[in-house]
Image 1 (cartoon, rainbow, N blue to C red):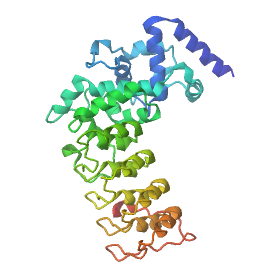
Image 2 (spheres, one colour):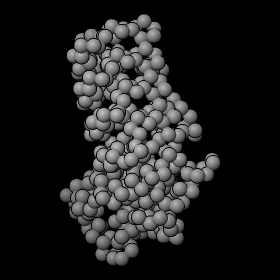
Image 3 (cartoon, rainbow, N blue to C red):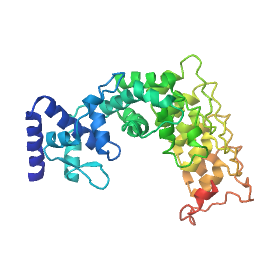
Image 4 (cartoon, one colour):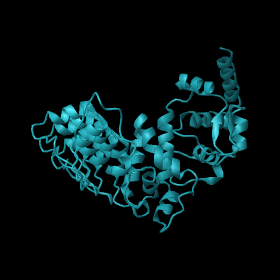
Length: 352
């Protein structure tokens, strides 16, 4: 009780500073407490300097980390080894999360800031550079990887419009390479990555409202493949975004069986992940081929059985045209016993 009272008193002092000091102090605490990962000190400073909707980054607005520390009156520190910022104690994080009114619509504000950075002339200049240095500007990595996460949490009209603006010329945007570098199971050279459209990106993040707009646009290719063969439906199914899967499957021109370069289909991905919701939606379409295997001959039911996803196995076996005995390229069938299953083999990644 004493701790929470002390936090409340300190926040009151921060607000009583008034003007720019109060704004900077509360903004810093909002970012630190709502960011998806620990922020570098330089990232925090650039994030707070952003003017939502501005086409240009104004570097003269970037405050120093010492200024932010002073404005927050000791509520956060900078780790010396990593240069990341953190709140002084986990109980402060709990306190701030328990009082969402302190920051208003934090996630939409963060999303709008990230999208403003990605839409800026400076970021677009990075995108057109033959060999861009993706470490500069400092806020590129966070904006690229997490703008969609914050947008999905709380989509404002402003974030929606900024997202659609970003997708006007997205294929060669530097943020696509940054985002793809976070995907550990990709089999293509990220430095030569291309073909990742706005619809791919919105499907990747699962932003239903933006996907709904994009699929209605003239010239939208709902089956467009990136350089890895991934379609928008593939990304949505892989990441378990049921709302986006529903929209894409509602289109008559969607091909639900289109495999990527490794032979993986949307159903394969959903079964591999044990995602019963997405598997159910895909199997409701009669044109979905439940026996379509990857390049190693492993079918959706093979993987579901291998991992012990009983619910997915049962869904697949309810389809009359499923062949549970279809062997992979090594002649292994999808034998599975719920009583004997103890977990996936540790070597599974090497078999994918």
